[in-house]
Image (cartoon, rainbow, N blue to C red):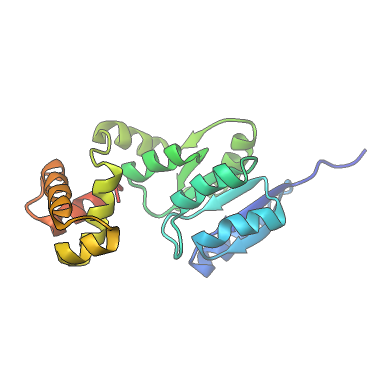
Length: 206
């Protein structure tokens, strides 16, 4: 009788030491095989098409594209691939956005290796796996109050760019940019745009 095919795993993390450590840990599991590793978010879909993984383990903050953006693209381009977000940034806002993007699991990197392997198995059984502490924090923290456009403008302005530059970059009028920033500052309870961006990042809204 033939042994069952091992679970094919794609790893995406911009820190090579972390990526290789995860690959080593998962490689110790008898029923798993790491078939591809990438260090950029915008390389995830191409790697999924080339290697046909069952599960993609994605970091959030990567060059080219975030893990959350890559998860949303995978849902469209490679819907068979299950997504597990594995991140250092255990922020409630990230959890919500990850689930909305189509991720089946959300774990922080300090979770035990056995928990990660079991999460991979569980998502293949059709379950959702969420770090319980983070899930409780997400419920307590409330929903992200920012609209997609407010997030875009706040992100563009966070580096200190003036309204005219933000407007040019996003194809908006200066008045529209000013209005979006004012609303974002009000919603975050901040005193200025820099503080609004900081608060939004800490909560995982940006």
